[in-house]
Length: 391
Image 1 (cartoon, rainbow, N blue to C red):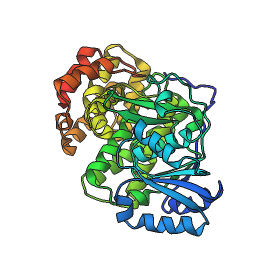
Image 2 (cartoon, rainbow, N blue to C red; image 1 turned 30 degrees about the vertical axis):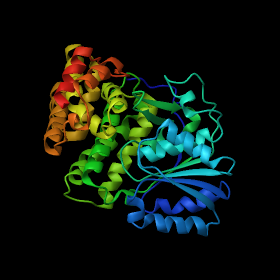
Image 3 (cartoon, rainbow, N blue to C red; image 1 turned 60 degrees about the vertical axis):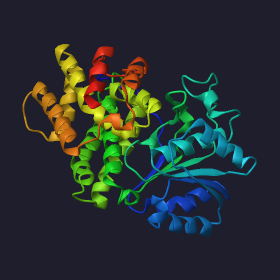
Image 4 (cartoon, rainbow, N blue to C red; image 1 turned 180 degrees about the horizontal axis):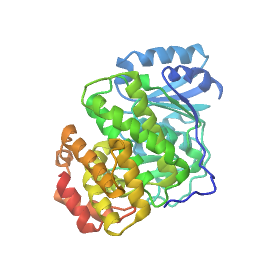
């Protein structure tokens, strides 16, 4: 931790950020060719009228396109089914307009259109094949502010019958273009806003305090945490819904994706991943419920171990979330936990037992869990305590 590497920063998509950015999609898609595949979410995009306007723009740009609606987390069967249905249909560009699941699905489809076999063959920890990195050009258009998938190199694929959520990963799978338009997130239901926002916060906290954290990205991460602290509570509690606030959360989510690709994640995601593979708990909700109890253990451990670099990083987060209120690093670390505790109480997240997290699921999740790049490691016993807390 506290390293400044050679600045061989992972590549970024070409990012267009701000209200109206989505209007660039037709011209950008057309720059890759005449044949497009467009993945969208369920009903919300069409209900808002935005899809109809976007479809008219695609047609007006001279594009021939196929549309698939993605209504669940991407599975190997779904991804393989889309690529099989397309068969020899020419596809010059893939665009995904939706939440993290839609973007992950689009990312995987863009890869598997030019890859032999099933996507399952290439998943980390599942298949035996290495992805080549070849793909159809891919454009990501997020309609939620959470996963940051528009700036990551992996696509998460779920198979609950086999009990896993695993990644299809390659540096080349980074989207070629990301159109981050906060207007697309206006009107997002409060529970979705909350779950997505807490996922972004968890990713920022864990990547900023990762054992692979790089000081080169500290400034955007702390600014993103400040923005999340300003915007998530009023948005999630239904107190306001403005483009300005949505823009701050969209920025936080985007940076969280950049950060996790650079520095990795920690014990929150190390537990949330197995849980999501074993029962249908929404990923953002799992991260939101786990964040406070996991960080309570982690912060106590780094303090007990006198881990100075980690303490300073948690203190920096405390100042970002709560404002610079003075005090030494230890008191600001505690203020960080106070913010998380206050959020946990005010947001009233449901217990994970509502999503099928039983004692059996908890036991399996602990066995599969990973501390990833956390600055302090939770033991299996401590993970069990965390899960009992959120049950």
